[in-house]
Figure: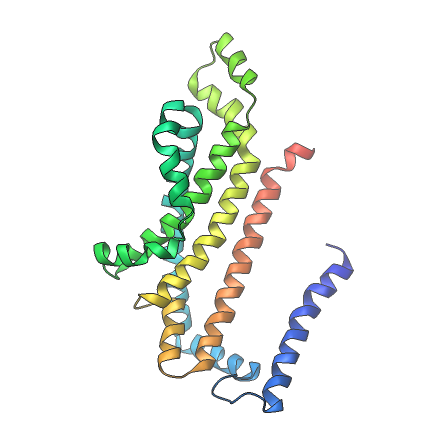
Length: 250
């Protein structure tokens, strides 16, 4: 990143905060509707010192981690299966593509009916959010491998483990890593939304309790925290992606 880019990256949030503070001082919005950033900062400090913020973040991150790992493994396996098997694609491909078009939040009422609002519900919604983009990215990545590579492997009687480790994985790494990164941020957004709707802990539930108590400072504190965590997750995933694909440009 160039020095100019770094300056712009820092200046843009500062300008936004300044405009936010000026809007609050102007009196154009009631104090109950728009809380100044200084008040949000004090609320964040109070939540952090009491341990409440740490507890909510820990609950949300645990759900995200568990659900994401399960969804990623299932998506990788399913995407590779329908890409390598014409029968599996014909049997499951249309149904998968149809479900892919449905917003994950639309599954919330059904999941609440079957799982309630306890931990299995929150983990399940993360699994669904991660599964679809990873499965689609894996399918596209495997299908993008030239068929001649498989024919050569067949001629040389390459064993299945060697076919996977020496051909499939190197050829599909870029597409799969992009799918993993997009699924991670998507799963985080869906988890916060699910916690807003039905949860007893987590960042989303903290925001919902703030709304019910007319504590807009708590709501905005949750927005800031969820945004910072989402940004950090995306940047971390991008760093891993660049490091893992560095060999392609070496």
